Amino acid sequence: MKQTPHYGIDAPNVIRNLFLIGILCLATSAALFSFVDRSKIIWLILIGWVFIVGISLVLTAILMIFSSKFGKLKERERILDMLSIKGDELILDVGCGKGLYLIGAAKRLTNGKAVGIDIWQSEDLSGNDMENTLQNAKLEGVIDKVSIETADMRKMPFENHTFDVVLSSFAIHNIYDRVEREKALKEIIRVLKPGGKLCIIDFQHIDEYLKFLEEQGIMGIHRFKTKLIFPPATAITGNKR
Ligand SMILES: C[S@@+](CC[C@H](N)C(=O)[O-])C[C@H]1O[C@@H](n2cnc3c(N)ncnc32)[C@H](O)[C@@H]1O
Image (cartoon, rainbow, N blue to C red):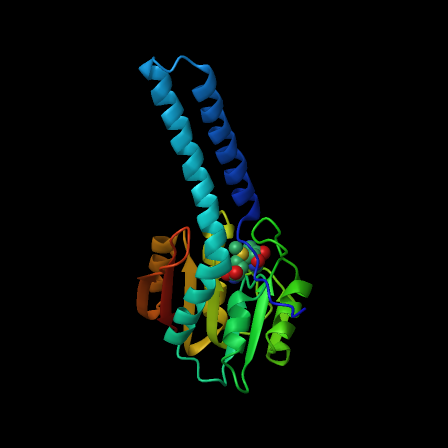
């Protein structure tokens, strides 16, 4: 049977909890509906409220799975189109996970190279493991254009001005402290060549990233909403002076 690449499900524990609590709420509303005195309006309001919470949680979990499996792949192509990759670039994917952008970018390269760094946190992405990323690169036919390292985005093992393009998708928000997130952004700017492009896609802290990038002199900053990603995400692009 032909093997296909799997880019993982974001925040698998959050999705599991949404399903569990959602189903518990739905079961509770069904039990209440069967056993309480339904002529009392207060019970009907309570049952309706528990049902709506339950259905919302389950739908949120389903949307998150749809986003990881389909939405993020579609949006990746749109965003990579916008970056106008020529083919000879050295590209860095920060927090590459199972290689969604790393491999997507590598497919557009001729004699360029795509490098991914990650610390492989399993709570951030299902099956998050360097071997799985390499396997995806093999399955997509780009293993010779990809290299991967274990490294923290706050202290990257690269010289100043190394990369033509630096990308990061749904990764920086996993650092919970603002000062630490700014360290990651500083590193992104440090390893980017003068004139190089950056692209950050995330669903939290967007205004904070924008302000910091402006303060650091990033030019031509463009911000746009993604369409098929849940939770709704924003992409920021810009150029180093
Ligand atoms: C939700 S996943 C997204 C993976 C991939 N970029 C994508 O869009 O499918 C977030 C990734 O960021 C990585 N990550 C979190 N903190 C990191 C850090 N300090 N340095 C490097 N990678 C980190 C996690 O291990 C995980 O692979």
